[in-house]
Image 1: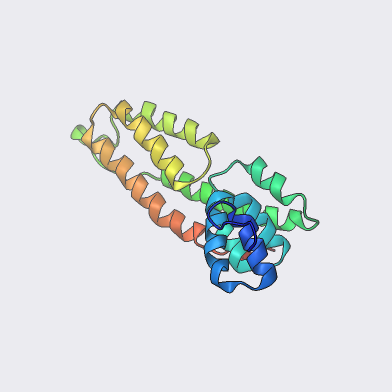
Image 2 (image 1 turned 60 degrees about the vertical axis):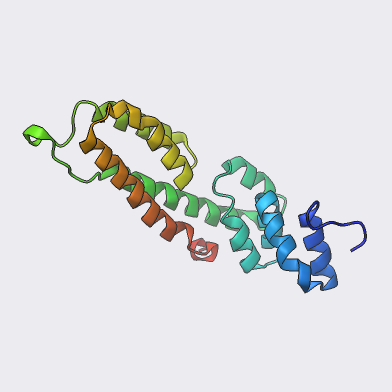
Length: 185
């Protein structure tokens, strides 16, 4: 590979290895390219019809802005179908997060109350921030952790918040682990 370094130019090294049949570096270059340029790799893998590489790269694109993914895909003639599938998957991830938010577990406080007065500012803050956040587990955890001080140390409400984190982790891994082809019509 004249003048190419897998470490410095993984995407170009992947293209070269693929074109010339260097299978020994293809995997390393591909994984490194996905880590560094997931959208570019996702769009390219789709354009060549490689669902394995496409799905690996797609897993890394959900923490990125929708516009960035759209910009990368729109250069290919069949972009609407794959972008639609990507968008449907991302919205399924958003639905999982909001399902956990809509149905918090019941934890009774003293006097039989479901939540204390501190719950409502916390809950409103989380809903507001998650409505515009990228629907990923890391974004959800960041929003929850950032809002926990609003609970003013209420151990009952913190149990509810922690259960939401667990539910999102379990259900989001199911959706995010599904291959993109399962979202294609």
